[in-house]
Length: 364
Image 1: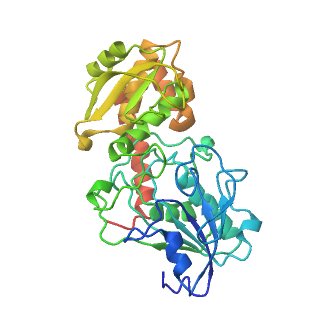
Image 2 (image 1 turned 120 degrees about the horizontal axis):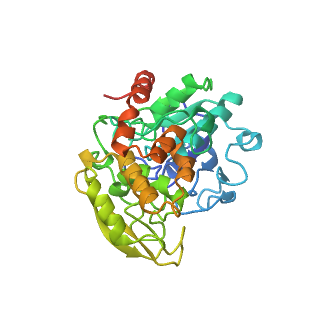
Image 3 (image 1 turned 45 degrees about the vertical axis):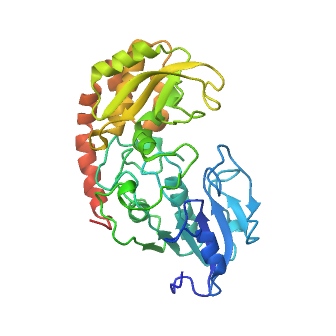
């Protein structure tokens, strides 16, 4: 933290429990101890400063430093003028999930927009894409569906770090922020998080394991259709179900599909929270047998297609657009097109995105 970018400055730090240095020290503590800078404000994304909240939360005060903590997942999702008063530089230090609808991406972009408006330099402490930096997958977000869970028209899995995304957003969305990315050392695009040697710190309450991380992009879209995706169980995103599902029937249907890299088995569970809290559910567990073969979005589409075919009066396919973000994909599923064919149909859009993305990559 001895960079000239911070010397003598009043720092606003956007962070949570994932913001730690190479020794595991919280970035909050590192800045607070540095006498050449003033930690003036802390900003927290969804799930709060400790990453445990599953609902909007209010502003607070850091009990150790006495610095105000402003909620960016409460009455506002953007830093207000009052929050930024007296701030000389904004620093973003949060671990991303590598998924378009994960809200930390949008929080970063909203903070960049606020920084540009106030002519405050914006610094990103870059961190790995936990899913690796090579695979891009999923439909592009429809241009008219940008929201807090979809800031920019890009696929669900984009294979970019937050520093790279910040550069792309700044240029392509013409944000105009005075952006500085503190890049990583020794990270290769081919590396998934477990290959970095870094300790996995769950970025949110339900992303507890890297297997869950790899399933999350495809499984999370199902919840809007009326399915528990394992919240309130010991294996979020590795189990799905509902009171109206027959475990054996769904398992047989999914086994028939031979989804690459994934094994399914019948399951019964009762979620402690979330969708169908306290209600007995049946469904399937999802085990990764070969992570290199797993196509997260293909997994999600196969399950959505199976539920739509087996339980057409119960599963609300249309509502999965909430996170899927692609009406054409929903329409193809409704027509009965095979998920593998739908995935192949994304190739043109992904090639165009890859060409745009290439300009902003920092690592090889």
